[in-house]
Length: 273
Image (cartoon, rainbow, N blue to C red; front, side, top):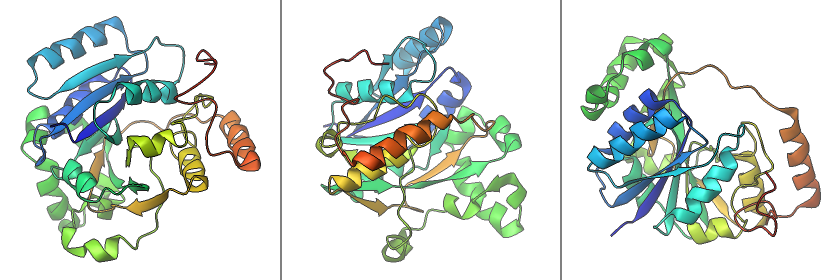
């Protein structure tokens, strides 16, 4: 039985996707599917993804849309509609999952609650040195403790977020709760209460998490921290460009205080973007 649908936001960076998929081969919970939410990767990449799917023991499906600029929210909504499970876990295609990542999201799930985890940011050197074999062997999980003990903090930022600390569960739940778009989970019917992602956002930040968090709060949904429980290791990349229009859209959303966006999963005009 499929207990969770893992939705991976992806665009063209196939070498990183292979590392991410390798981390799901070693999950302690096996009852999940993966949907690669592809925001318009090239034909060559799509062909390679189809080959990976055919050869993999994982349950993977590829959900694609034409490349028309940054439309992550739109492809995420499309993946949600194609998801089989009642419970959804969202990650990015550059985030390697700890072996207990799915276990912790499922263990802590609650109706009316959004679970929000965190990630450790790896350096470019470590990111470039990783292989599928190293990821499957749990290299990052083993090395993080020794790196910290040796004080090698230059290899990553927010190092403490890469530690898996289940014995501190009661304390960790008291941590500040803010939604992170690359590491959160929610029951599908709770996400439908706010009509999913707002597809007017056409650039990174705000629309992927801050907007969701605000509208979810209006709808009565709460955020619960799974920091140091649902752990991720974020592969290095250059900082993405921002768009001031995102802030304008969010200010409008806050001003109108409408939790159910008309530009989401269900639309009268599905071709707004």
